Image (tube, rainbow, N blue to C red; front, side, top):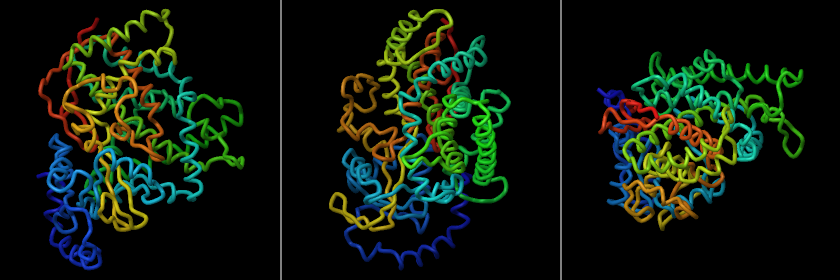
Length: 476
């Protein structure tokens, strides 16, 4: 039996009683102008259906069914034990992204907060704001250009060790190995295979428990994720303390990786960043840069196997760059700028198989949206599928068409794999480099065929092929 169903079946009577008490104290009945929708079962709401539609390969079904039944702009539900308004479409995205810290603030389920304590729990609010302002500076294109050759070197070593000489491989676990190796090198200058493997095991345990039933008992994915996060944070603190000593003794350089940049950066008052805050941000960057990018490059391999005409165009662009390089010369910023069609392909992959399904906010005051009242304290959810697969935003949404991203690209707030507004993913440019370097190295070496033509895609919590995408390699 699915652990989610088992958990809720066991505790349903208690949850029902808790809901009756909660209902009397809530404003469900007292506010007649709430968005249309249903709150589902007592306390658990519609959490089961929300999670299971993803695990069954159709994450957009939860959203589409309710948009069709209730409203294409906003509907109410209850997820993770919280009353929630789901805002839809480009208008909804713009509203939430534009009202960060005015009407809404970032929110995650308690399970996520226990695994990743927020910066306000581990340092002052001012410190958190300072880091949020400075983080984009560490990850802007000008700062990341120096790491392109480093990424290319890691990609070459990865393909030599894990792909070349093999007839068949499983893409997803190898993609995770590549993206984590790159992240360890770029963020922390760690490339020792044993050390990388040790950290990778911790992060795999972390990822498995992020969005799961929050049962904090020995042996559960949730407990393993909490333990992995604590161990990783201690490991990062030790790395930070050693790096500070190395910088003081000139054994490390200021520009060797993101960690050195963070340790030496100062704000407008000349103050350095808090070590624990840096550890939290590196932890977030590693999990974000590892899992989301590995999902994207896996789906790039999937779609290129299914669409030979798209593969041929990407191959043509990448081989033109490869032929312009001298033997042993690494990729550079000028090469990346030439990969326009390849990036359009990657964007279309992220539209159809977004690495993240969306995010959550909390109302910090009462407000109205689309004519409906959103009470203070209610949670809000924006979801990529309300626009990515919406024919009003993308005609023939199931068709793979990289030309959607030519020129000025899609309309604002319709393509949102990295979010938007002040909370837009700061690692967007880093992900672009990592993905394009992977595409260059894989396509100049191989063509490939899927071994499971109709392999199911599941979302748990990231999209992934159910069997990891096994392929047969066809070396050039």
